[in-house]
Image (tube, rainbow, N blue to C red; front, side, top):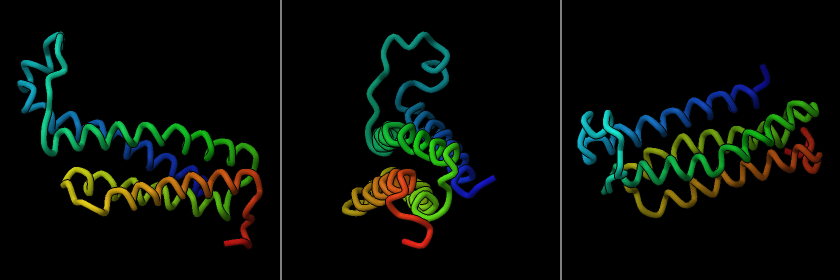
Length: 137
């Protein structure tokens, strides 16, 4: 298994953590297991950390499909290593940091960390098209 595919799998696992964290944090504010077991006619508003974790999860799932598609395309086309590997590393570690930073509401750090993840996607894209080979980084 290449590093890029390993990081893709870890990123998918991180997506699961996002779902669980957002769900668990919002459950208490929405009415607990009674609400969860019901037909959920209303989503119910959440605030504070629960709302931040919900937004972090939404943000993750806006970027993850792009990352996954590019990593898979790089793998299928034999473009592993170099910029693709660097991009996968940047994306995964930035997204890993993003969840607690957003959840705890730490100001001024969340946006640069998000930016690192986006740069990671850009590196994967560049490596896929050979714009930055293994010797370029």
